[in-house]
Length: 622
Image 1 (tube, one colour):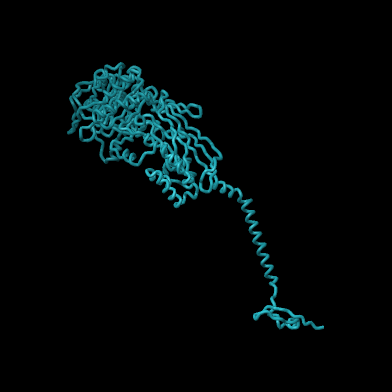
Image 2 (tube, rainbow, N blue to C red):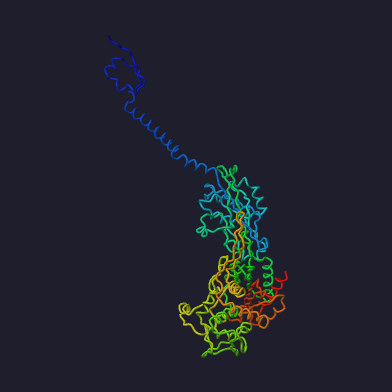
């Protein structure tokens, strides 16, 4: 049976018609389309299934094994945590008068979204802010540059004025990621008077972060004074605000708020009214006599409480709490009179004749003299070709009178030896100086205390490559030469004589009020009874004679009996001197030690005693 069925196939020349016979014969096989290769199809399906398995495995891995990780990242992309600065503790004087407190303040902050860190966004934002706050542009740029990768926000402007805050709110829609935050800044009552005691707080620097790991660059920290020394108590515990933000950094809502906890309050031993009186009295004298610097220290000799601590010139620490300008800061640190330098604890001065009571204790204790030993002063002594003068010829004096009239010859003799007096020598001078706390820090609760200096022959050889001469011992015996001490050290040493021989560690802070409890900063005895009470009494009597019959007679008409010692020490080549007066009162039951130092007085002038009188008249009339 034969088929002759016709087929239409597509060829190069168009549609052609062929029959079964042609197909069966294979002549047109090349012209018929053949199906896909089955092996290739299998490979294709294996590839599709493999991709599905890979994708499913990846989804499984991301969901189960890395789910928490990416969930955290996602959460961070939509939430921000702002650290809320804790109000610092307040500071009070011994009678409850507030010296430091916190006042409300506004800061302009930027949520530190990663997109905001990019230069292009930062520059655009800064240009917008520059138009609003042109005078604060440099400050904003500096704050931007200080932000680290770990900071959740950056403070662009601190302590905004009301005008600045309103200006921002008017333009807030064009400043995504920025907001005004309520905070507080320090306000120092009578900052100029208390600045060297209180110090100030300021924005932490990168270098300070090395020793303060729990701080960030957005934090503030105590820089000087009590603000620095008691930082861990004053700081408090910061709070937190968890915010939900959108992709532009705009805050949508506050999710959680943890309130900050205020720092501990400090109660000082400082008598604020006495501090003000001393500041005023010293300032008036300096201004009247055209002098630049002076120091005053008042201590309770019964326990080491510091009642007042004045260093002039001074500075206003409120400048720092409000954000000091570069110009103001440059002016402060370039001032040749060094207003930020605390002369009371860091100034090292030759003590001059205020050193003589210490020398008297050493000479009496070592048996070099007795209370009845008489030494004649004819105006000076000669050793070889060297002449060591006295400020006047005193004739014969015993130890009490030598203190009262401040005889240099007497103390040359008991220190370095002369005539029939062998002298205690420099080694013993250093030992007794150390017993009275000279030559090392007192340990007061303020940063930056200096040590003062008591020399030795070994030191001179090593430092200056010179031998020790008898003249060096003579000069040291009257508190000059290489001997230096701080005003605070002298106050502590005189307090030791006043109380009968107990050396206390000076203390500024009396109490720390923490978490509803009170931590008492109790009196600390450094050493006691290192000198015979009878010897101490002889020296006390000599210091009393300074007022009754010696160089400080103008104090005789005070309502209380005062004991004291004058002192001068020359420096420079212009007949300039440091003028000292150290004293305590009442004589029979001392409750205050007062040290006054005036820098730069002329040789004929003497101002420390009148200042002392003015202060005692005030203090004992209250």
